[in-house]
Structure formats: structure tokens, C-alpha cells
Length: 186
Image 1 (cartoon, one colour):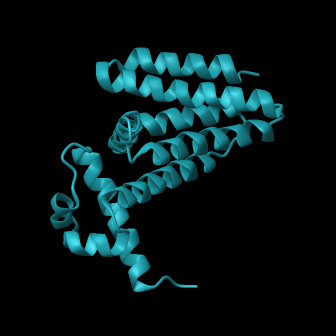
Image 2 (cartoon, one colour):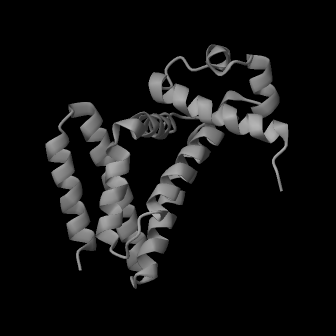
């Protein structure tokens, strides 16, 4: 079934917003400031998404979809290789802005009454559940897989934040490899 023109345009707007936010971040982000870079108006963005926060949620869902598709495309049953491929994707300069956006959303969700709380919780939960399924598929017990998935996903996010703040690529790469070895080596 083909998509309607509205669905196609909505998809284009989400992708364009993701690219825009990769370059600019969340600071000062409004529908009015975004619209010209997408070749549209704030009014049309409201038509497609309703609110700025609904657009941000769609953007985060698209980012997660892309990253999970890349993770699923890794042709191996070795969870360590899969984890290190995920780390490579997270630290790829072409994706760093997307992950910076994710980290910004996670951080702003900590503020009392943040409209991003549900988006952030869903982002964390979705990643943990995805990695947990991968670990269960290779024979980990469900309880162990959930804990290990939490440690791996949260560890990688923390290492990415460290890397973005300090610029220390060598140390954070070594730490990511060490974490993968500790959790996933046969």
C-alpha cells in the first residue's frame, strides 16, 4: 500500500527536522525557527504534528528506528561484535548530532514537569528491550539479559556523553571495548 502525500510529506519533515537538529541542537528550537529550513511554515508543521513536542517525539522515534535498523543489519551472532558496531554507529561523525539530540532530550526530561519525560522514558526502555531480546536470542536468561542490556545501553550513553564533553576518543573507545568484553565475551 502506498503512502498518501500527507504521510510522505510528514516523513520528509521528520527526516529534515532530524538533520536540522543534528546541526543546531535543541537550544532555541521552535517550529517558527525550523520551518524555513524545511521549506514550510510553522502553521503547516502544526498541521502535521500538532505541537513542537509531538514533532520531537516523531524525530526521536525516527532516529531510534534508523539506529535499530543499523544494529539489526549487523550480520553476526556474536553480541560483542554487534555491540561494538553499535558503538561505532554512535560515534560516527555522521550520527553524533543525532545522539547529541537524544542526550539533550534525556537531560531535559529530568526537569520537573518536562514534556519530554515520556519520550525519554520510551527511548531508554526501547533500547534496553531491544538489546535484551538480542541477548535472550543468544541464550542469556531473561533476568540476566535485562540487567546486561541496561548496563550496556546506559554504559554506552555515558561513554558517549564523556566523549562529547572531553573529546577523548581513544579513552572512550577503549572503555567501550572493555565494557563489551566484560559483558559479552564468550
